[in-house]
Image 1 (cartoon, rainbow, N blue to C red):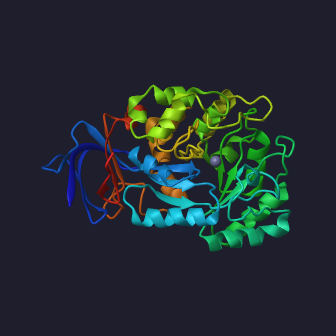
Image 2 (tube, rainbow, N blue to C red):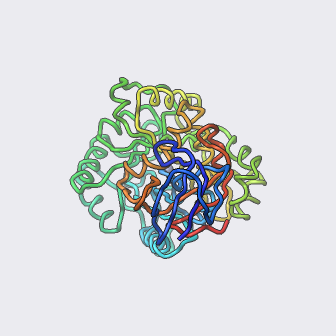
Image 3 (cartoon, helix red, strand yellow):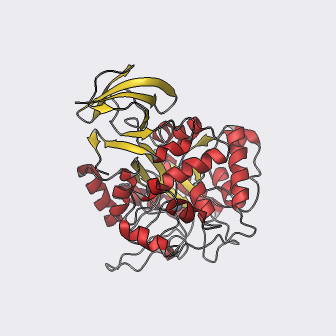
Length: 397
Ligand SMILES: [Zn+2]
């Protein structure tokens, strides 16, 4: 049994004042107001649920350790390949206490010979990424992913005019959504342009990720209010400039948990091969204006980074550390610190059907983040990590 005493509490929804939290057997046992004798002195700190990054790509087992050291206790992978690699990571997450837990979409739905298949390096085993040639392929694609263990479906939505590769038609996107819905799983759409955002919503996707970089959203407020969106502001910024890397390298709190080889590569100015946005007129200002519009309309917000670093290599959006940049960018884009923290804890747990986490309450999994200061007043306080627990086990940082 461990008692964390005297910290202010953010329970995933709201601030609850000074509290004593007891954990036992991997679960939260008691949450009591006030301060008492405890194993961990939380005075001057804030205790939050472990963060949930609602958009990552897993490229190596090292990603999960780096995420956990930065207080991200669960990652929602939005496309990793091949399936045996994703299965290997699931196995590790079930056994290990030094890596973040994960859920995964597995393979993403895209056109034959289109994105994202063309991003993948040749697989030594000869495996190749399946694609869809039309709506008739949707049911089989979805059924195969569920057999591989996908927790939800990811679908690539881009206008054929904007990318140099074959893309799914709106009818095929809608067929993937219908097939996933019939199997009782969510669909998440990659939609970084106005056309893609509209097409994804019209097709009936459950979660839209990214935000249009090429101009304002053209939907009425009541439609935006009913949208669940994971804006990935860190990636939107990375597609248009190099501010992430500069900001990250300038903050010793973010540098602390990074893989040393990745850090060395970042210091040489290597962007990790990330292309700039191909959409005409792409600008981060459009993404930020669209975020503000969604916030004002009352859309449901999820914090996600699109972290995609290959362990040991540089990347513009890295696991773990980028989640703290994302929270700051969400607040700059109009969310209150409380709403940004909800978007990183209780809201993704609720949207993705993870009832055991994302909140601090008796019976919940003891995924916890203890930070110095008060992130409800200044959200960058999440970087001052004092402690992380994964299912009750303290993380060696
Ligand atoms: Zn992504």
